[in-house]
Image (tube, rainbow, N blue to C red; front, top):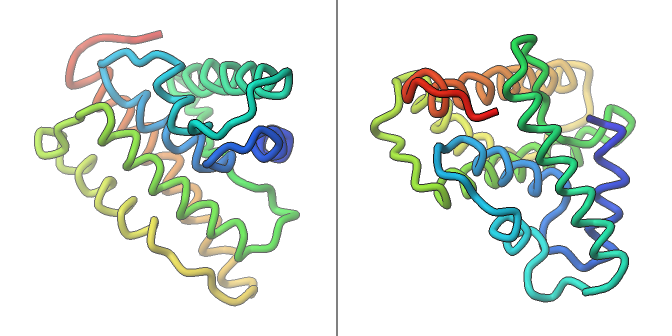
Length: 180
């Protein structure tokens, strides 16, 4: 996913989007955790806003976002648990990666709110994961140390697995259907 982040982020900046790549992916993940089908336009409205440029760059950005949606759905539906949050790579300073992680979590919560998922009706571990996303969305960047790098990697893995479980509980297990 690291190879996707920078080009998408640049594309979003060029068209004047109101979200960066991490936030864009977060809201997408929240929207995908619902049985309610959503149109790309609904997602794009929140990502690009009304200030986005309408030209060839916007068309290219929308194509990238459409590919990201398909790719993310495939990851979430993968029996090999291939899902990864779209965040900056390890070559980016830890403080920036943590800031992006917080934005990703906040955007997942926003996407869930847009879908109308009734959190109180979810299994306990999904409710706890959503509570954790709220806490992580408020995370402050620490100093750059090996311990903090390790903590970031553990948090990344927790979120990765938690998102897979949330998606499965909301869309597959609880409702007994597959949305591929």
